[in-house]
Length: 154
Image (cartoon, rainbow, N blue to C red; front, side, top):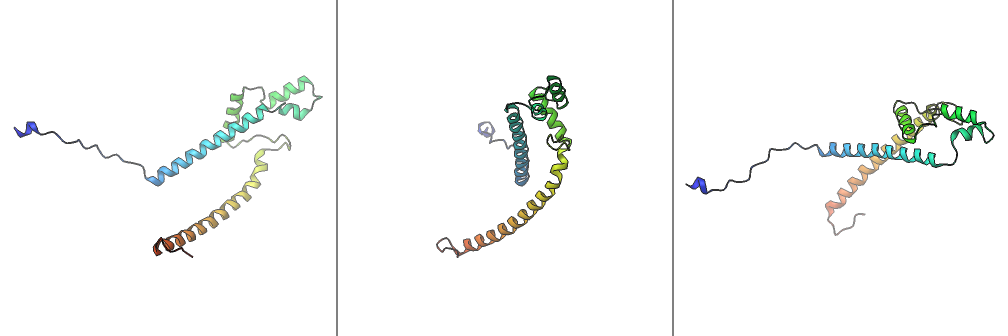
């Protein structure tokens, strides 16, 4: 009879497997970085669209004939809709083709590549220096914390 009067306790949920916190943070940072790059590329692309004139007019000048302008616009894919133009550029960029510089008439990668090596060296040195400083400051803060909160650490 007591079995009929007892109220069953809460049913235990099966244990969910959660992602490791560092992995979750890393994936979050990567997703944020990718979203930022996409958003910035869209903003820059739209900004170039709203500028007066276009690349064909800038290259050929004001005295260009309509036929030459039309041919150059077709060659530079300026006749596409803005969405199609952006997707065409983004697809090519993901494959490593950043196009040709309109001012120097060489592939953009040939201009950016050598500068990328210098940037990589700067990034590496700044990462090393900030890691060393971070560890030293962390050790100093830990030493200060063990002395108690009433004494300033000097």
